[in-house]
Amino acid sequence: MRRADTMFFIGFIVFTLVILVFATYTFYLSERKSNTEIIGDKQIKLLEIYGEGEKQLFFIDKSAEYVQGDAFLDLSSFDTGCGSKNNYYLWKKGFQDCFLTQDLIQKQFNKTFNSRLNEYFINYGGLLQDNYEIILKDNYVMGNAINPLNIKAENISYLITPNFKIKTDYNFDSLLDISEKAKKYSEECKDDLNCWNLKAQQSTYQWQIDKNGKVFMFDVNTNLKVGFFEQKEFIVKFAIDFEENPLFTS
Amino acid sequence: MYKKAINRPVISVFIFILLLLLIFLFWYLQIPGKVIHPMAEKQTIKAEITNDATLVLLNYLRTPIILDNKEIDMTDLIILWQNNKEKYSNILNEETKEIFGGVYGYCYTFNIYDNEQKYNFGSNQYMPGDSLTQVRIPTKEGDLIVELNPNQFFSRKFYSTQKGGIDPYKSCEVK
Image 1 (tube, rainbow over the protein chains, first blue to last red):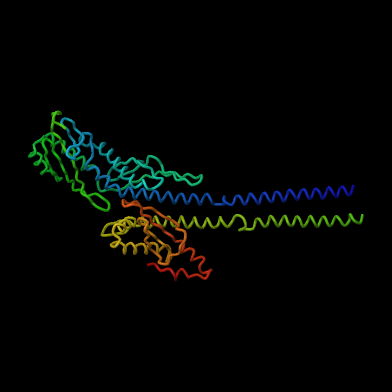
Image 2 (tube, chains in turn red, cyan):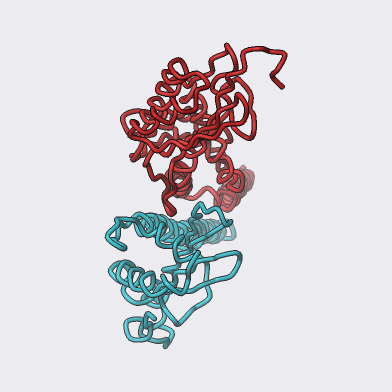
């Protein structure tokens, strides 16, 4: 019996040690596997993503700053719905009026601004095209992002709404003013060039008027200079076709 | 009887030694630096430096300066320099030296990549190493990338003297 007790005791001890060694080995292996999941790893990734977000916001801010002048200059000549003649867009075609309105200009500015931004964004991975609702108000251009930026790394997703606001030296007032004057003069002068020239002399803007049949072409210098690196004059170009007989219009 | 009396202490000693070995094994695995710590420490320091360098570089790019009585920022100056290197090289060099010199002292590398050509500002003693941060500047002419690498400053400050290297405060001279 004593021998049996001893054997049992030794067996029990050996069995316990085997379990302990196995547990230790398993613990060791699990620790080795967790090397990649180090303390603070997620926080480091977050810092890196935050840094990447800041870089993208910087790129967007500077892009918006650089394109705003060109986007505004694009408003000097655009299709208002009456087509074009002699490389000038018509603001009036016979009985059809296509003079500028606040909404029309705003819509066009939104289009040109996004188009200009796209030129910069196309080479920067992750920045969305046509992603802004642009509003020009009180000499500020505000860009409200339609979709947020999504910066991903592993299983972290960082969402930012990259809105921007830029101070400008211009607004839509001069453009609307010229459109209103053009509408008023067209009603008063119709296709009388002398009358137009007289009206132009009284204006604060510099009007250059050319005539080709019943089509009057205008280059109106607003005295505004726009642009970030290179300042360009903002000259509004449009035409009015006084031909009211549709048989004579081309 | 006599045999059995000897066996018990022998077994006890054997078990005691095994337990000691087991305790030693546990202790060994817990030694700092054997399993977990080296990577954690290294990555933490690198992340701190990277993040710091990104913020420093962005702040540099947003730093306002007066040029021809007009307030612009360093980003604008870099774009002007891109279009006319001869005219703006000196002022860009001076402003860069003043801004980064205040942050990193002497040793840093600041590069501008214009159409894949590298222009170096900052320390003239370039030490190859990881570029810690890069920022892209929007231009009409194509990609313009600025790169800040204060790594050589840190590596020299902390390690070079131990390895018999050059004293960073004396060796790096900004152009």
